[in-house]
Image (cartoon, rainbow, N blue to C red; front, side):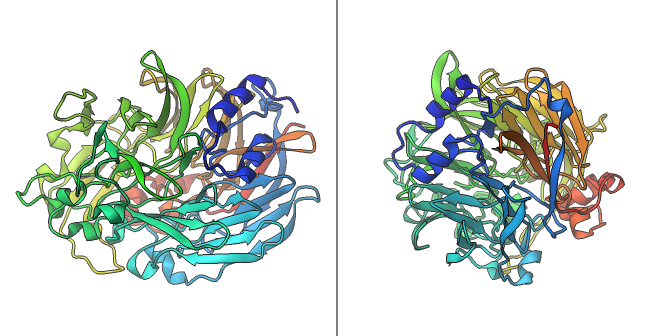
Length: 605
């Protein structure tokens, strides 16, 4: 199979250079483009493949090669993994894992079905999704809904060890995929909507022993930060950087969920992730001692940590004192690129708050922060002047502040809606164009906060939401190409509903993605021209992936509507304000799709 030498050289230099703690099994796996070894494609989260047998000239000839039913009818996020001649397929709750033999008609080699208490289902915030399994050292790592982390023998499916990460009875659940660096496998936890103080944890990949745990907020020693060495905006964070920004003991219910996709730079030996909203969604209950806004660090923040110790190298809070549920959990794409006339190691992060951040991943200094959806109106922009008192902070528009407008007051026409200008659906990068390909939400909301009382294991939200397209518009999504140096949209394709699917880019010059109605599409990376379109059995919230086998390239994706946007269909909800406002906003999906749970794979004839 032909491969782009240019693209391969770039990827090798960006992702596999001089690893300090890189796992050799993952390195070897990723070096063969016929594999799809990680949910993110590789440690950089670029989601770019060097395979180019399917390209802009022939992608229109693709045909369905084979399909597989998972047997589960809920939202299917993430993608399968392909290692050699074996494909590993996961499902939403109950989190079944299948190993399929690509050499023998895709027959099931083994099936692992964990025994979980179904009482975890109502505790899961936004559908019973799972973002996929990961691979290292002959093991498959599954993060279950009940927070159990399981290591399976990749050949046999035998359970090697398992570790209970948290407790669903307190509102703690697991939906995110793990990441492996060296001999450490790391996972986060969800629960901010239940008043959980969330955390990121490292386990030994061979024994399941817990090595360290870093909380999103709280005392320095529990956050694994060094007051003098952990940096933020180029300066040491100082002692009690988190505690000083909370009233009393509110940090103990602080939130800061960690459930997005993670990235790792082997050269810097840093793993990158983001934290979610502070609890509760009612900002009036989180006001400072003087009754004014207070930052509530380190919710809504990017974090860079040493995977061996968990110690934080730097932190950057994007949305201080969140008033809109703009979780900062989205993926961080690692690229070495020219920014402001200078080549720099950066991460590019498309935040829920509607701003795309280009950040020096070594120092944590933000270099670019611009709106990647034209509807964003809650802020006029992010201050990037290091000499300014508001350095690194967004300027909030007073009329869109749910705090300033007050408890029990409905703040209208806030853009984006709580699910953000992009949620968990991962973007991709292509070294062919130097552009990022982003599945976005084009959605606004009304937001009315109300007083809520904390009870362990019960919802701790405190807001009623309604969602809808921006005024004067009828579409709710765009698929865009983004220039992370200029902070500009290069091209944009409208979609009727949010684009809730992860993007794949390849050396063939194509970018592929799914839609909530169930269409799978591939476009030209250069101009967004649609080159292929095919209907799948259900709405798509899964991530496109590719692999090579027997001399042929294949491209695949899960269909199975659900997730936050599709929660009405997935859970049978009809009240417009249910699903934290998504049920009414996406009611039109009922006219296009129904529940499903399938994998569809395409190839050339």
